[in-house]
Length: 311
Image 1: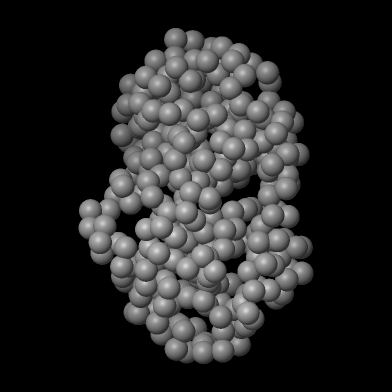
Image 2: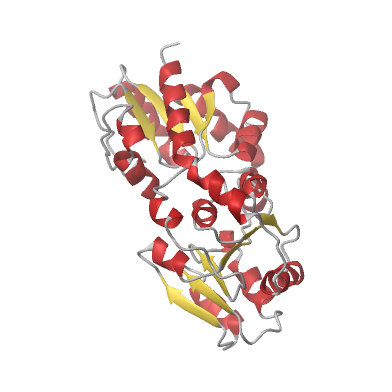
């Protein structure tokens, strides 16, 4: 929803046309009839939603239908999907349901073209974006990292269980792990912390800028991550960023994030120790420059897609 709000508020996106947000439950619910030239779906592609998409197209024959694939990636498939043949058929259905499919990272784009056999001419890579102005305005963090941030849903996807175990291997009483988020793994993560007072659980943070301002660096040991908006926000804020080199995180590595190759407490414990010990693991200046241009690239991507719909 933050991305959708950004589409509404961005001057560059407003210059491309008038935007209207329509909420829908998907599934067997009744799709909207609109006079829109283009309908952009941000809902999940699932068997439950296939009838909805088919009806949406039938009820709006004059509109081009575009799907933004936020949820699926190769690492997600390897971690969460048992029936890969059925999954391929589901993803392949997008060839018939949508006029265009938007992918949100280089790795996801290549995987969908290869695995789901999507037509490259109907697939557009547009990396996600939100309003980064307040993150870019944050003062640079101190040169010595003392507060490491874990920001996001407390779900196994994010790998915070690995991060908590890793942080407990850091033999420094003067550093902390600041966890911002809520979710189903909350109790399990508190249990893993075993009362370590250096690990602070803040719960859900309604203001992501304030959460970012409260940390000196960010760690993202995700098991899958089609893109990773928190990574983009961390780079905009000039925070050193440690990531698992999977899916969309590979784009952030190219922009200056530091990859931790193994998703183990040992590997992440070493990386955290090096980061807090003053090792210059990340190119924060280059990463901040990359984030500063994110909105322009986002708008240019959508302009290219919309211009090509008439071809």
